[in-house]
Length: 228
Image (cartoon, rainbow, N blue to C red; front, top):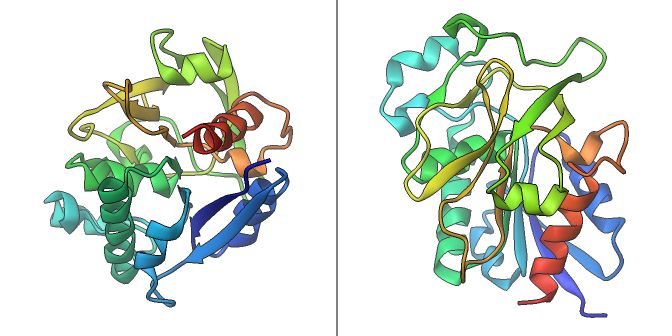
């Protein structure tokens, strides 16, 4: 079995991502973080996971006035992960973005964010005090996400107060919640391109890790790396 090395960006829940991906045989993990100053280590990885965490500073999508809606911000992390994405583009690395990972990647590709979903008139998508929310999503049946999961509808967990608004250049929404929140993003044109999925939920900590929106996404990511 071909071994694969996957870089995971550091965050307060880093161990969740590490444990989830290491459950697959033949996988090694590299921690990437601004505290380690090791964005260049991404080029030695076979694939990258952008993890969850703090809000992206709105100045990076030209909406500095949105800062009042943000919770925690870490601009050093923002800049570091933009550098990691530079490496992803330069070396055409498979990418899986999770929660904040979706948001920072969307901003990198010149998209924008809703800084606080409830303040902008949508349902609350944040986690409860002791657990994640769960809700249904609709998946566009023409997308790679549908090919991966085989589901046009399904249940995912939810723990975010921001979301994608304007979708980045070359990207497209692949799934939505019932109130129109973007739940997933992928490339508009996938042919000949490496794996690229951005998900707003947390596949690494679902109560049911057999859920296709957890298990099949992880397997598709790793298989895409092995088959390069």
